[in-house]
Image (cartoon, rainbow, N blue to C red):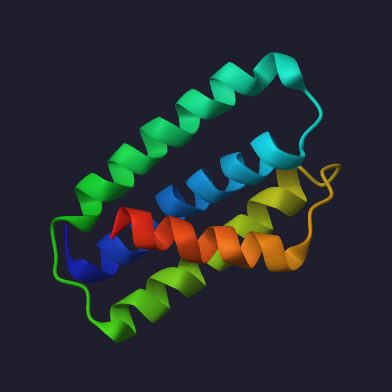
Amino acid sequence: MGKNKAIQSLGKVIGNVVVHKVVLKYGKKMESENHTSSEIVAYRNTAISIGMEFNWNDNDKIEIRKEVHDFFIKKMNEKYSHIKYPGKEAENIINETIKECL
């Protein structure tokens, strides 16, 4: 996989980690807590694996962050529009998750 494809892939995978973290924190379905937690671990492990394939410069990280943000917004609007969360908190989770995975 080329670096540009890896950036797109990381955007989706890290985006899924962020989506699941927000759903876990702000969602109301306690019965899905175990499933959501396991999804976070699985997506994070995949992101770490992809992230280890390349050296990421600052421009790459900016592009990855943009991909993550765009994916997160799209997924939350499409699938989890009923979950309300503070926008600033989502940005913090995005930044922290990117640091965890790269």
